[in-house]
Length: 166
Image 1 (cartoon, rainbow, N blue to C red):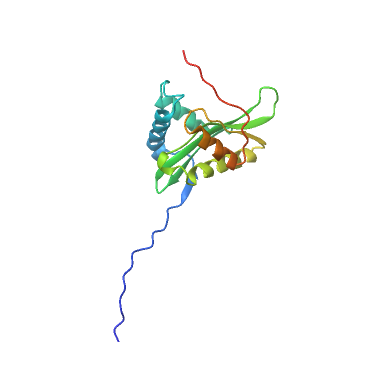
Image 2: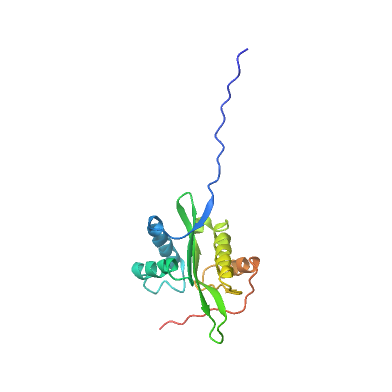
């Protein structure tokens, strides 16, 4: 009896989404991501985007324990990033964590990258004793969708952002 040989397509295993620090191999992709965010932003595109200043700020997370910057990577591709800080509120020595920038490429929105970045930011803040987290939206893009995401993550809307240019 001859055994019948069958061939089948290899099973595609999805690549794991990883949250990690920005390291030199990812810096050019982070810069590209920053340019995408800047171009999409309604509120910030009138300001100059400076690579050296931005990279200096993001690298601060490697030395300053109150600065956070992580990227979401799948298969070597940077899908998004989250930049945040811990500081005291103006009326108390109590510390709070807040985002400065949070962006996910359009092609990766609706996936796990955004949620995983926020979860990692919250874990980081909690490990440092933070009890309050503030997320904002200052780009002026997809405000209602962003608000819905924040609410699904357990945040409540407590204000608005405004901008005035001269």
